[in-house]
Length: 351
Image (cartoon, rainbow, N blue to C red; front, top):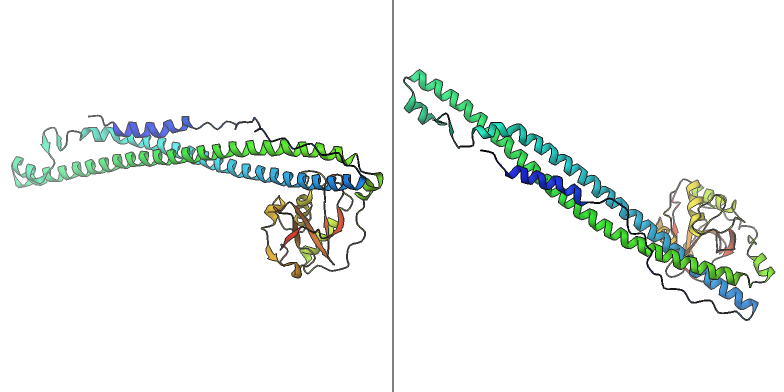
């Protein structure tokens, strides 16, 4: 008698592989709401104020786009893990099918319950059918061997069925997790495209306004801010980060750049602390969770200082109320006083 449940269970586990498509996500960008065109400034000072406002907005959009990319990368990692789990579940299903086929022939011999050749598997039948005490012992021993074989075959067979069922459950779970990750990633990708489109619009507007700045205002953007305060950092790592950042004074601001020749704000802090042997997250919002929090009164050289709500700018504190940072597009890495929109600080070089 051929048993069927194992075929259905294993077939279900193997069929799960076909359900998951590991292809790309939707690539059409979501429709970003167009930003209003900048108003014509009437004076040079108006143009400078407008430029700085647009630059701050663009920097925030840049941070949001990078965060969306980081979220997308994390969801892709979730998808990769789910795909690996699904592959493992399918492999387990294949092994269960091999085990099932291995024991199927033995199980079929016992498919009609407890008879083989019309002889029952119990000692009573040996006693009733035996012609002597010796015959009884021989029959009994043989039947015990057959019974042990039957029990082992059935146990192995049942184990194969259970393994296949487990594989099917694991495949279903992996498939569900994969679908969730794919859906989330697709949403994040559309969000990323929308933010990138908004950022590009903002940069275009920023460039238009920059053309209205006076020559002296544009030249001021290239000023690196003079000498750094002569305040030693409390740790070697903090001092190394400061020295590396100061070695980049005059380097141009670049959206999404992490060096070595151009930087955005969090790219500069990332680069400087990497040289000091400390790995920071990519965006200013992520960096605002690194290390330990310190109050403004507790600031020491090397501390990361954060600005804006939500946070969209970061610099490295130098002492005497100054920092080194990559301010905005059109600008360069420079030394500046702490900005008015200061919100928090973190100490990442703890020893």
